[in-house]
Image 1: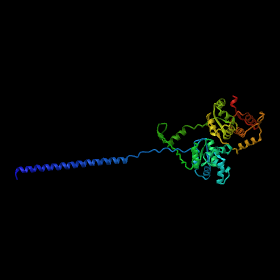
Image 2: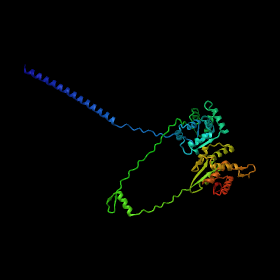
Image 3: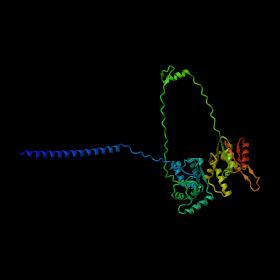
Image 4: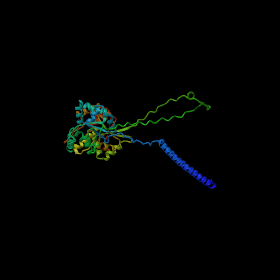
Length: 412
């Protein structure tokens, strides 16, 4: 073999070796890049797995409540309550201050037939279940019957007796209606009456937030020489050093509040925005004043306005007007109570009569007699412009040897 051929072969061999090394190097680099990418993907996946899930705050569910100051109960509500069903839902709906629960004698009669119990027992049950002072019985008069007939004509396929009467009362008094009757609920939607289905109400459990008690720091006790001692040693040392002084309790002064109770005449002046009456009541005393009346007085005023002036007012309209002048609240009155029985006896006796008007003889109304008995029995101040009521109250107080307070803002 010649020398030239040997060098040629050697060069070719080295070129091939370089080429092989170059290929291996590229393969290694590619492999390294792939491994790096795989490592990065694993890191990202691990990070995602470790990252906490986003906290989605659940919206606070507020308990469903009636909207208006008055609410009418349908027959199915009474029957369900009697049977112990959906009572929590009803309490949640009715959990509103000063709400008045209206029971028509129609709903009571229908419930009586279906439950096999008398109307009075059912009425007392409803009062006991939802609050004695809040429940009022609504007697079906001609005005309610006429209104029910109008609603029947307007919704002939949906409203029939006795449902039309219950619906008509809610419409007349601008009251909410609680019912499970779909036809009545549809009519409520048409007439813009707030309707609630007690069987569909979700009872919301209101959880009380418990605030943890802060841990009190550990106290360190010292003797006279500034030497640290235990709590027991410190207590004994204090006992020796000083005798306890007698604790004198200061008498607690009761906050005196003036309770002013309105009769029908004063409500009439307030509804007419009589400034002398309103300002006289508001400026009665520098002490705290609370204005009161009871539901029968308001109902008597509403009926008197309808009969005398053909003016239609709702219970809520009167209550809202009275609330505008200050801290006002009305109460339900139990005619079967001792005060109610005394008032009834005074009313039936017809002891006080004003015959100064030749055309019309005036007597005390049933609500006047209740006000007299309440005034004698309770520490309230009667606000009235009724001359006969003032005279009768003064005379009754004198005969029974008690002191009463009467305020007439028109005599200022």
